[in-house]
Image (cartoon, helix red, strand yellow):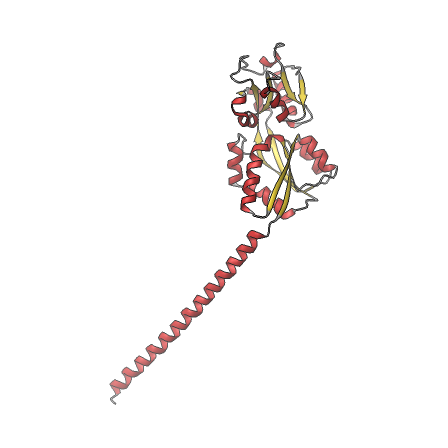
Length: 275
């Protein structure tokens, strides 16, 4: 065999060995990639399935519509969880929490009512403001009494309802009245903003001072009237994980949803303002 032929055979053998080695490396790489993918999938599956059980949220009455929507979203994102709500006046909720009522999350309509919880040591960490809300006058549909200002509510012929000053919507209304130098004697003081709005919806009152979000949620059952003094009484809404939360992990995840871009879209769509 000539030297040239022997060299050709050696080159072919080298090529075959190199090809076999490359194939082995590709197979090993594929196995490794498959293993990594399986591992990642298992990790993702584990991560997505680790939240379960009930999450109890105590939230200001004005959050009812938007939080109900977010609760449904949360349950879809985390199968096996259930979000239950207690909607009421923030002061009532704060008193319940400090009195030992079991809950995971507290969303208040004002920093003052949140302070009741934090001062009692019932909050875990520092509450975060997630939205703001502004007052609006709710009148009967079509505004038959032609209410156009806060001053118009002082007309003795009108039946006006306010929230009690112990709850955030009532405290905000008091700020607005003080800013305008007006005195108003309502036919009743209600314990939360939904109760005040209901009086108008049932035509038991001609007008009520409530939040913009509540007027929007009521649809054609009332007509909303803006007034400039409301800008001096905007409420910040803080949210916090509670110290003795029965379901801490799920509670944290719900709070993150509320603060997320998706949560903010739901809340601003309901009429809330970003912080």
